[in-house]
Structures are given as structure tokens and as C-alpha cells.
Image (cartoon, rainbow, N blue to C red; front, side):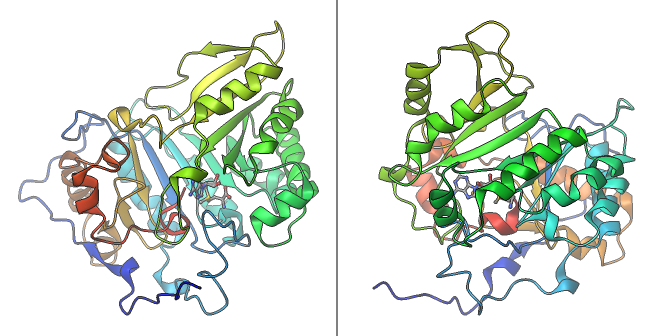
Length: 373
Ligand code: SAM
């Protein structure tokens, strides 16, 4: 049996302190990084806790009763999140996704949704405000989230078969409750809904076609995600990755598909519609492993305790909380964010396996539940 390694230093707390430029540039809404990628999408992790223990994300052997989750005082408050989100929006962000951990475990999340729903893009439009959830408490919360101003939800669902689903969430959680959550979200108007299925070869790949059959004909975008090497806890192996091309081939064999274009610049998914005329819904594949999409990645991530990460596979963040709690003005924090983005070079998925990526791996990568999926 492999030994469990408990790091002496808590690596979550290592971060660079962003520098504040001498000349404070006001945000233009058109910030570009070194690869000419704009900043459009902000993902905010509101908690590092989750009630599931999916082996590919928060395996029970690591995230057990003795695991030290972040103390409440470390978390950004809703006021702090809203303040920093406003600064990001001024730099060009048009979409905010709340995530975690399980975001619906954060108490009074509707209050944060309400605060973010008031923000307006540089062009004066509403933000695209969405949330990713495991769906476990969605049936209870869908109406209140919609009333607070949430536009859409993405629900993670790795199998329809109850036994497989319970095994994958490793919390003995029944699939029926998540399906009820999906129905409630649709009824509440939190659509068009996305449903995310992480595919692990040999674990749930037999569920691909049943999932397609189940959601075909509903106004749902069913997304198949390649199992990724995020974090350092899931024991990722390439032979457990089922390439998206194979997912599409398996569905095609049963239900003909027609390719669709990208819905928005920087979109992570390749999309297909059902070829049969008039059938609502679509499928998509997210192929970070076999077909990297770094070239137009316009996403920034704000961790639960206020570190800004520029890539899902990063090892270090930039400590915005230190600025927020250190008495810096909006102009100073905004200029610091601008500088961090302008210096961004990250493209881990494109480099995966290369010497450059190996160098980056000298440091332990952050976990997905902390950085936000
Ligand atoms: N708790 C929420 C949920 O379950 O959707 C939000 C957080 S979760 C980290 C966000 C998404 O990341 C989920 O769809 C999850 O399946 C996906 N995810 C986590 N670990 C992954 C991995 N190793 N490879 C691919 N997707 C992963």
C-alpha cells in the first residue's frame, strides 16, 4: 500500500504578492496577456468543502476526517468577493461562475448571487452569472438562486446507474436526488442547463450512451469531460482517459450528430447537435488532455481564500486577499490585477508532458476543489 504523504508546509498558502505598479493605469476592459488572450471569464471558488468524495477530485483517502479545510476567517467574505469581482468586470470580464468545493454548501450563497447580479459589464450589460454544482441540494435551492439573479447552472453527473453513481461520488449519494435537482433547476428557469460528466475509462464509460439517451430531446447541453491530471491527489493515469473522439464515436453509432460552432469565443467545449431535425439539446466534449484549448483561454480563477490563479494546472496563485485586507484602494488592486494578467504566459495543457511542464511540476499543483473547477 502506498504511504500517505502529509506535507509539512501547507502549500495552499504559498502565493506571490502582486506588485502594484507605480503608475496606476485605469482598467480599459481590454486587457491582454502575453499570448494576446483577453480576460473574460472569472471562476470563483466559494468554499473548499464538498459533501462528495469523487475519486478523481477529492479522494476519501486524502480528504478524510483529519483533513484541515480552510478556517472560516480565511475565506473571502461576500463583500470581498463582490469588490474584487467588480474590479475584474472593469477589466473586461463578462461571465462569472461560482464553484468550489460544492458552492451550495456556502451559507446564504443567494446573498452573494444578488450582489454579483448587480454588476454590469464594460458595455453596460448584465453579466452571464452561473454556478457549477454536484446537484445534491439543488432541488431545495433552485428557486431562491433564480430569484437572487442567477442565470444558469451546470450540474455534474457522472452516471445514471445508481450503483455506479454512488461509487463515483463515494458518499453513497443517490442519483435520483441529483436528477430531481436538475428538474427543479429547469423548472426555476436556470437554463439552458449544462450537465457535466467526467469520463473515466473502465469506471463510467459504459454510461456515455445511456446519458446521451436520457438527455436527448431536453434543452440540455450534455458535456463529456476528459479525466484531467489536476491537483496531486487523484493518482491520474493516462490509460484511464477516454479520448473525446471515442465518446463522440460511441454516441454517433447510436444517434447521428451534426457539428455546431462555438457558442462564444474561448469556449472550452466542442459542440454537436442531434442530427434529427427538431430534437432539442446538444452534446459537447471538453478535451483538455487530447486537444488542449489554451490558445484562447480567457479564464481567471479566484480561490476560496482570494488567490488569483491563471491556469487550472497552476502551482501558485497571486494573493489578492493580502491586498484586500491590507488597506489597498480599488485603483491599486485593479492595477495589480491588470499587471498579473498582462504577464500571464500559462498554457499547461499544450505543454503537458514536455520539459517545460515537467519544470512546472517541481511544485505541487493546487487541488481543484480549492481553486474551483
Ligand atoms: N462541486 C461542484 C461540482 O461537483 O460540480 C463544483 C466543483 S467541481 C471541482 C467542478 C467540476 O470539475 C465538476 O464537473 C467535476 O466533475 C470536475 N472535475 C473535478 N476533478 C476533475 C478531473 N480530475 N478531471 C476532470 N474534471 C474534473
